[in-house]
Image (tube, rainbow, N blue to C red; front, side):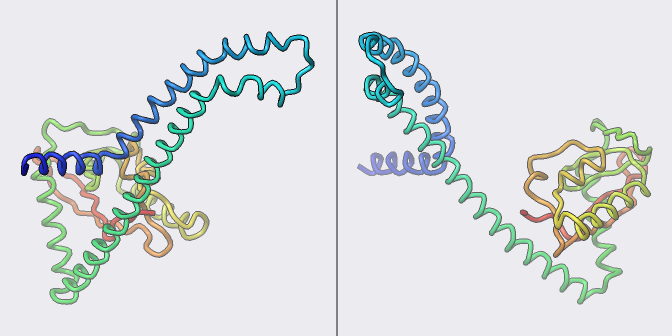
Length: 246
């Protein structure tokens, strides 16, 4: 009996967790089935209309003649639409919950950071940040990694959020940041992380589509000049205020 209960519980948990994927699969299958049923129903509808060939039928009259042929099509089509809408609704609620959790975490992190600066001073806090940047390079060594050539310079950079090495120019990056923030403050009110990646010459990421900065907290970057494992100087890009869900 306990095994049966455990099995039922496991199935319920699986359905709850994977419900968006299951509903999406049902929606895809429904689209295919709807098309197939419509194709099958059309010859029957044509036969019924041919029987009425001597009558001058309006579009409404034609609908009354053939609508029963399409009942299965409409039923499956309705189920398909409901499945797709439910999958989207569940994903939207989960994304909203994740955004809320992230917001709470980010607030706690900022409070912690402010308290650290208050207790040990800004200079020591920056030394700690620089040490963390070196640790990032040590844990993600340049050897064997792809270096992205953006065509904007020959200085090696490491972008901490996407963990990518790329070549650019320090002054170019500084100008990108200034223009990025100027656009937020003067025109667009917010910009995404992918907008920043685009300006840097990097490919977009899935994370970068939904996160970024706005007028309440513009982009603020900390540069750390470090040495990669191959002995090559490397500037690590860290974010004083990390991007938030927009």
